[in-house]
Image (cartoon, rainbow, N blue to C red; front, side):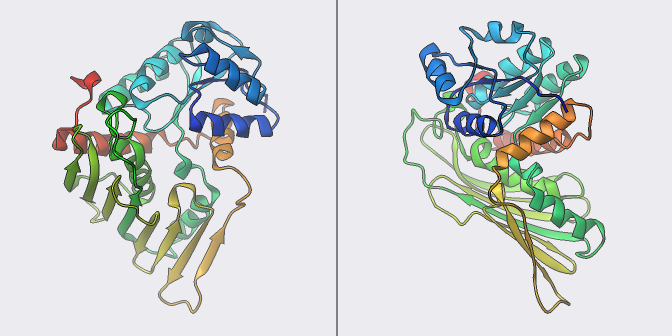
Length: 324
C-alpha cells in the first residue's frame, strides 16, 4: 500500500491525538490548517508537519494531498466535507460527521459523484475486539439479539459559551457522546431502529444535557441508551442475546469484552492489543478503503445513526443556528 499524504483541519485535542498517532507510525500529517495560523504553526512544529496552509482553499488546491482529516466543531464539518469532495480528496471526519441527516445526504451525494471515500472517525467501527465478538454472532453461538443497554455520562461544568452547552457550537449530549452510544447500538442491530421513545432534560441554552432513549425495530430488537452531562456514569455497554450476553467496559475504545453463555461454565474473555491507539485502526482502515481494498468504514451505519440522532433532536426541539 502506498504512503498517503494526509492534511488535518483543526488543531484541538482530538486532532492532537491523531497527529501523535500519525507521527509515531512514521507518516505524519503532510499539512495542517487552522483558522488561527499561529496555532497551526505551533501544531506543525510539535508533530513534524511539513506544510501550514494560510487558508482552507490553499489546502484543497494542493494536489499532493490524498486524504483530509476534519477535526473542527461539528457545525463546520459540512463546509469542509463539501470542499474536500469538490477537490476530489478522500475524507475522514470526526464525529458527529454532520449536524443532521440532510447534511450527510448532501455530503454523500457529492462524494459519490466525485469518486471519493467519505467516513466518520468512529472508533467502534474499527476496534478489533468488536470484530472478534461479531464472529460469535455470525456463527450462531450467541443466538439472536434481544436487548442492548448503553450508558455514557460525564460531568461537564455548565458554561453557555463552551462546546458542550453552546448551540452556536452544536452542543448537547446527542452529537458529543450520543453518537458513540448509537454507533454501538447500530453495530449490533440487524436493522435500524424504527420506533423511538425518549425523555430529555434541556440546559438553559436549549441543548440536551441528559436523556434516556428507548428504541425498537421490526425484529423486536430493543435498546436503552442513557446520556448525561450532569451525572457521571460507568461507560458500559451490554448486548444481550438468546444464548448469553456480551459486556464492554469503556465501550467507545474497548480493548476487551466478556461473553457469558448460559450453557458454559466459564465466560469467554476477548482481548485485543491495548498498546495500539484506537485512532490507528481508523487510519489503517481508511487507507485500505482509499487503496481499493475492503471498505470497513461503515458509512451506511453512520447514516442510520445520524437518522436516529436527527429524529430525536427534532422531537426535542434542539435546533442549531445553521438549521434554522
